[in-house]
Image (cartoon, rainbow, N blue to C red):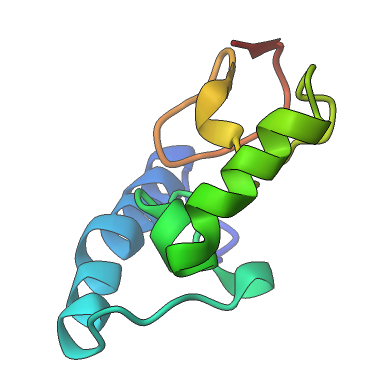
Length: 100
C-alpha cells in the first residue's frame, strides 16, 4: 500500500477484489476452489470455494463435535452461524464480540 493510502481507499480496493476480480476469475475457472491461506477473507461463497462438495459433511461433523462453536475462524466450517460485531464492510477484523 502507498503510505498515503486512506482507509476508504483500502476499503474500495478490497471491495473491488471481492466483487470484480474474483468474479472474473470464476468466469474462466468455474467450479475451481481457493488456496485457503491466500484466499479472500471476504469470499462470499467460502463454503464452495474452500471446501467444495465436502462442506455439508464437514458442517455436520462440526455440529456434532463442536456443540458450542468454540473452534472458529472467519471462513471456517460453521462460521456462517455467527458474526463479529462492529465490522466494517470489506475491512475484516476480529476486534469485536462474536454473536450467534
